[in-house]
Image (cartoon, rainbow, N blue to C red; front, side, top):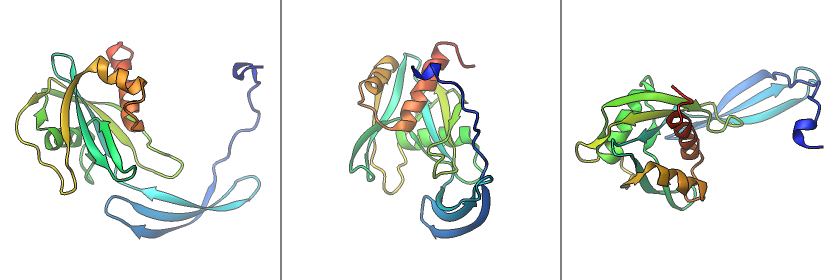
Length: 194
């Protein structure tokens, strides 16, 4: 029997009741909370750690000649370099599209003629509450110097869009949020998204 032949489960998951919530620690880019929940049916209780962070933005920056802007930078979590699309933290109260345009300009020195929200994803809902907004910027051209954050050192490149997608398919782009963005870009290019 394959997965499609399994009968649907008659058991639907329950919403857990939040019993207690307390801040544990605060870091520059996120806050940690300890939260206690109780299951609605069996009354089992458990303690969970939640990471709170501002929303993030990732930018699909396209040129009129069919290329995409990429950034290569050292990532401390994996102690290695990654190939990504531009992006960063959305400031409190900042519009996601405006944040995408700002991050694109700061990290690459590029700007575009049109920017729009393409999609939104949840980075890791098991332990995080924030959203990653995927912004599409078309008609990108170089307009000035980069403005890196104090711990940023970024190499900027332009590659044909199909080559970027192929790199992800070959596992050369491993950042999950970038792969998400490329999924939505493909759907948009095929006319399946407005």
